[in-house]
Length: 159
Ligand code: FEO
Image (cartoon, rainbow, N blue to C red; front, side, top):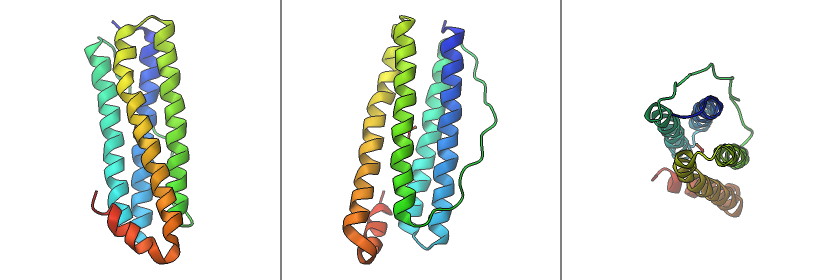
């Protein structure tokens, strides 16, 4: 059975993942409103992935005889100046999420909860990928410049 301390921390992470889902959904609708349908589609898929992360954590709590507590979610931003700003925000946000995951791993290590450490390794690897993807999109948008934005938009629409 998982400890109360780890259970509470994982519940907070579930909340953070669901907040991320709302953040990316909000970005998706901002991008759609601005006419960037490819970016919007990419962000909507990203939002769905964040919900999958929340489910994965919640399912794990159940497997370990824990209790899932879904708390209220803080409001998310609704506007960004440009698609570049939205993706820069995504990159910064993912770096923060990586720190949160690292803290969970640290807590599991301190408690000698080997099952949770092993479970969290999936999230550690996922965060490497999430950061790399966001960083790469920021770079591509910068390289493309205003004229090439249309092509990056089309490219991401294929996700
Ligand atoms: Fe669930 Fe984007 O980290």
